[in-house]
Image 1 (tube, helix red, strand yellow):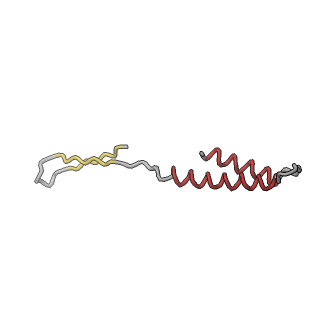
Image 2 (cartoon, one colour):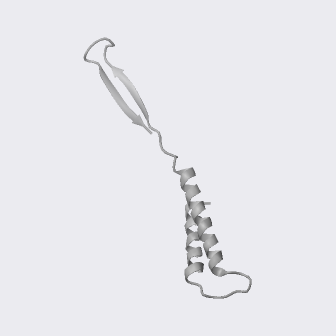
Image 3 (tube, helix red, strand yellow):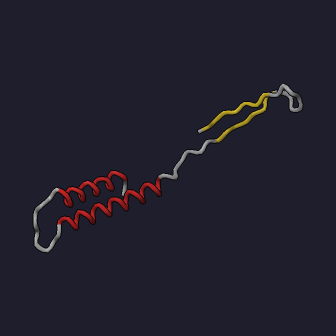
Length: 81
């Protein structure tokens, strides 16, 4: 379940819980709304915890230019993504 689906479930659940005042026999619409909001919140938390650790790692290349044992050696660093 993605972030969009989770937010959609939370929105639909909130609408059913707080805005709909209809009565259906055998079904409590506010309870269905609360269930949808809880399912959306759990889906949002799971989505953020699973996909949040994906970070880009950077690789730094170092190259020495000049004679190996002299002071005028220059180290070039380049970040590669």
